[in-house]
Image (cartoon, rainbow, N blue to C red; front, side, top):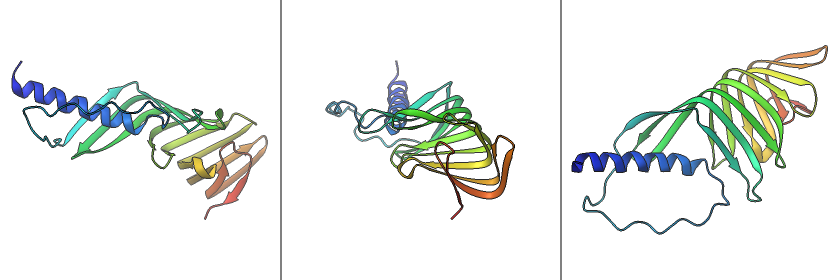
Length: 183
């Protein structure tokens, strides 16, 4: 194997590990000590684009309870320097409260931020509460787990039986049990 192929393999592995670490639980075992430096000295990551087929991502809180879970047809990601960003495509997701799923949604696109514990979905988002018979449709939602709130905008429709509420934007709790006007 050529030196170039070995370096390229190491870079791709590093990118994948960076992405996975952004989506892993806070409760993981402590990281292993870094490997000793290789002959190639310090390597800066090149700009790269890649795709992962049928990924499932999830995040847990400090007590090990699931916060969110996302399954997708694919994940398209880019790296620049050591920063990694990606978009999930054709997403089926679940949002949790106290370790129990309270909202299920489907969306053309989504992304999650492990640091802020937020999930954003866009396209035509269709969500259903798992605690009652309420449905939400919106062009875009942003779930803020720490606040137990979803900010929905771009043609929001909230359905509960025969009751329908149409707004430009709304705030709802994660289980679609409470509604507030958008900020």
